[in-house]
Image (cartoon, protein in one colour):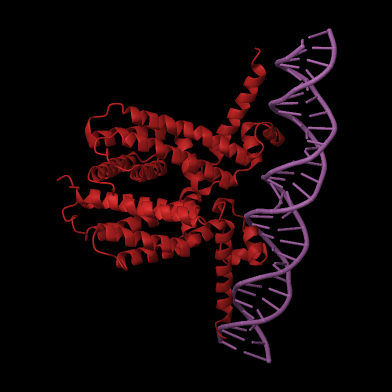
Length: 209
Length: 209
DNA sequence: GTAGTGGGTGCACAGTCGTTCACTGAATAC
DNA sequence: GTATTCAGTGAACGACTGTGCACCCACTAC
């Protein structure tokens, strides 16, 4: 039991992160109080400081954690499990994976969607930065797609940004539609169509020389 | 001076709306207190209730007001002032108008972007509903574009959703880049490219029979 | 001219907020 | 076996929260 001390600390830390994720589910980090979190966790308010120096610092930790989930999704998309060949196949597989991950990591995706626009400035910046990294990753993937050989790096980034934006929006819609499976199905179908439209458009695109 | 009484009331109401818009600029409605607003306006907290029954009701009023701005923008886009013919011309003119309106109605656009994801549930719903109406409007506009004659209504809605999503994202980026004109210019340029890409793709699209 | 309306006031209430400080006691290091 | 470290405690602080109530008085309707 040599690790018991640090284990306990880690357990409390996790409990704080989970409680915060729960409590700001339908408001925001900026409306989250240290005391609420402490009560939810079952510790005294001052004990919070043993783990985070402020709610904002907690928020940054949640950003890190949430993007681990999001990157896991990107990895799956890249692997393209069960993808049929062609743009339609890529679109179908990608959207399926997106929907799946959004359901399994509801709170993380919801957290990102919310705090991206409403969090404390430092949290907003951190999220913006992470999303930019995702766009860069996607851009290098797109460069491997047939038909993009002569694209400029700039155009690849712009297309990537468009796709990420559309998929973030899809994730948000799905989160808002939780509990209405028919609406969800329709949203997924729409996302598939959008992705195909964009890829079809991309196929016809030529970067300005 | 027969109107002085109602005029005064309206003036205070406006002051409350403006103060709220100011105060939640870098947090959110859910973190806005009635007392802050009252202090900013220069009235006693209880006087707030003469105008709104809660912060949430205030939020719904701000949604209405903000979408007046947004609809004014859509009207301008539809009018297409100074648009050259062709998709590139439409894209250029539309993005120019978007950037212009975002600057002129900074707070309204920022409010929508923020509360759409982080506001009280009723406010989120109201915004979602308004955006859906905008998408419908845009869909009927798109139906008048050459090349979309045989599109299904469903596909028009999906394309419209994609465009609105991309433009909302552009607006958010521009708001986040305030004070860095070079970044802003780049964002506008990217938005133009995205819009062209989407329209080029749309031209090649055929709805499934 | 008089009665009434209603926006704004001032006080009070019971809570909650973040943060301080001195503390306890069990797991740790040596 | 003893000394130390440190996650968690509990009371206390001054400030802020939403809301209820009685009140005032300029403007309004008649």
